[in-house]
Image 1: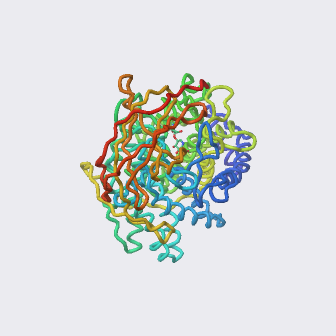
Image 2: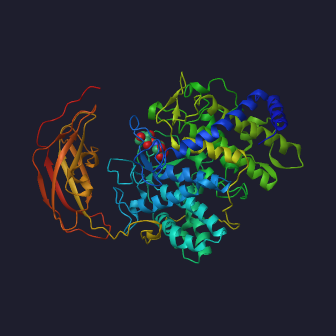
Image 3: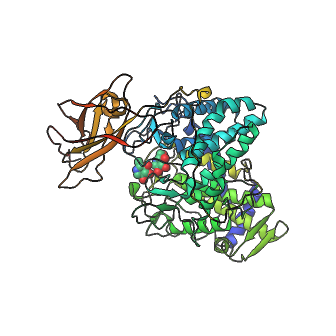
Length: 623
Ligand code: NOJ
Ligand code: NOJ
């Protein structure tokens, strides 16, 4: 906790540059942080099964994204949100909150089980493809709905969190437990990273397919840390040999001015400015790594230039009226990316707080190395805060070091103050707050990730730093190669995973002619777990991406898994109506002799159906 005199000094220094970090503001901020810390922690715990009070029905150790069940429905568990939440909870545990240990063990148990759940991205066996599934039902069962999948950041983020805890256990002499119980979970995730890092996937916002900076950065860290842990355990990590190539890819997002957040497949309207480039370095943060490390730490000159470019994008009052009139050296409300239209595109708590965390992390790196280096690339970032800034290296004996550090701290605090301003009295944090009047919370209420971002931000603000992971000898290969190592996968049974075997799958292409109105959707339901076992809630959705007026086509290639001994698929098509109206389900029961299934994870289509919906059409409820 900084002393009042430090704050006052920082305030005075900043005041000299036109900022208004008043003493009163600083005191109010400290008070807010003090009040919000237990609220945020409790907000997280309330959303974790099986005992979280806001998420009845959630499985053991499963983090529900938000208790919200409609507009939006976030009552699911996302691998990304869960891993990032546990990264912070494990930090909290390591910094002294010992009571969290049983929960961490529940997380390990829950993830070991989730790894084995067959889902629309695939299965664990034989090829790990199922690990790329972004989200599951709250009880841990598969989610069949259409979604941006696979998302390849889940496995590396989970590995990073589990390694963080494993390293602690090793330091306590519990190496055997790590080797037998936790490593098998981590090993699956690392195998997935090694095999698929160079394959396209959806970004963390679940919208664009391609390669994403955030994902690549998490993938790199997981392989490096995985190699270190494997060595400690005396085990191999074949996938880890891919690390240098992932690092090579990581460099390529820099466009000379900022980090292009995604390489996107297909047409899009994005300029590449995206919070993913600010959140990635938080995951990769190593306070002992030099600022010019190619791991792209928060304090890297390119990342500071990128940070400024990202923040400045949202200073535009035409884009974000909420930020109107705020001077260049003060924090503002920040969202995902400027073209965002989700809930009309608003600031997010976790991004505004993440940006504060970013700056605290930057300061921590300077403190560790004992100097601040300003390059021509990062100079504009510094000049916003300190107009006298110039290129050079300033050690702790130089007054500029202390002035800049104070200004950046004040700048970081001003982002926290923005989140304070828009957090309601009761401390509850939704996903977003309106960019226009009345600037009130919107989208999912009590978002676990928002609370976690607050707790994580405060760890860094307090100077609680994560362990170091970057090796001394990182080198970027001179040419990048898009390679891949085929992984081996196995259920982590010691951690509680069921002993699944390779499932036998028959890929069948269903094509259905059905004229529909906008808002109506089509599903297949039937006597297979893949088709929801006749339960419409978990029926298999068809896609309309090739739908035209001439050919009103709904289709999907469905990896059918049949109950032991059942070879005859019985199924119906079902129309899901808008506005909560009743489903329209076919009367006829269709039959398909399921082609002999295969266990090789192949995507070959073994049978095709081309049918037309039988029964009445739907009509919009007009809601
Ligand atoms: C679109 C949003 O932008 C994305 O982030 C979200 O996950 C999905 N819709 C589902 O709510
Ligand atoms: C939408 C966000 O875009 C995504 O990153 C997140 O995983 C889900 N909401 C759940 O919080």
